[in-house]
Length: 222
Image 1 (cartoon, one colour):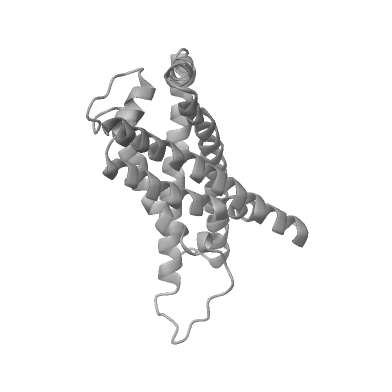
Image 2 (tube, helix red, strand yellow; image 1 turned 90 degrees about the vertical axis):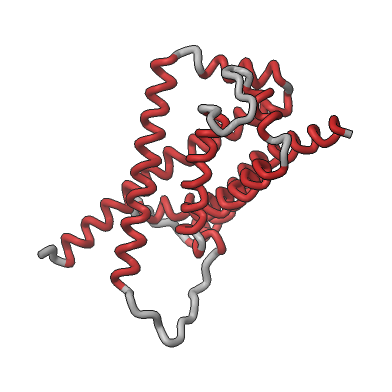
């Protein structure tokens, strides 16, 4: 039977795995966001960027392997920690006063589940093209424009980006705590603001792409 010390050590290790995998995923999201903004520069810029990424197949698949491993670790450990927390406190309090916390902190597990479903859909939709009405490999701008020519995919992406924003808004702060970093109160507040600003920029920027594509499609249809 595991002792409390062993359980605590395991929990610390898992939180560290969550933090490291979260850092990898956050870096990817920021880079993905920066690359996707080329949509606003037109088809030549976005398609050329996509071609550049696919030019070195070994590097691309290595990056994908690291990203996939980080994603799997993040999801599995997050669910495990959540279930352990639920088991540790199976009986609800008669009266529960919620401590002051952000919306992102209170919804981490739920936004995480939304993002899990979104990633699966996104890969099938715009990476593999299985859920795309007219997917053409290499023609990223056209694929994006066609994908968001209807309302339903656009709404799915926008809602998912709201979930991403909430997740990132607390995730950056949570990663530092999971790694055991101690910050002064002023630096902690600064990191909190940075998390929120980063979350807003990424979420709004990524959501703007499907919204713009839908708007252009509706304008052309008039």
